[in-house]
Image 1 (tube, rainbow, N blue to C red):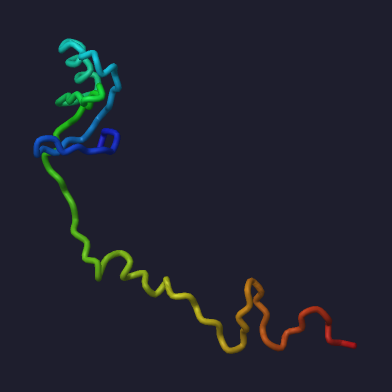
Image 2: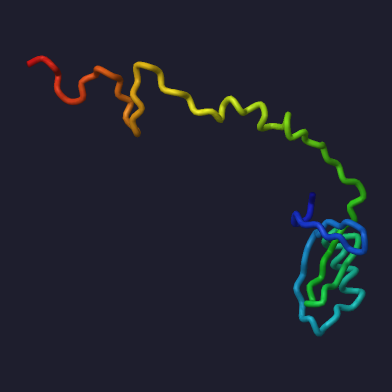
Length: 111
């Protein structure tokens, strides 16, 4: 896409919006100006909205997509990595502290 990333469905046709231009709703731009702006913005067509906004658009002729099988999609291969590892028998589960059973927690044990 070379536009602003938006599309519009107008009278059954799909268009990519290249540029929008807000103007006074009461005034209509003359044809000479709009033709110059279409050339400047590399737009095929121009639509004027009721609020005075002009849409410079290009018609989308082909839409390419690749169907995704939800059962074999990108997340199906990552299911193993989403499972949290279980603590082993010699580790206790503590919040933020990795202390193994039998390990001293403050004194040296040589008294």
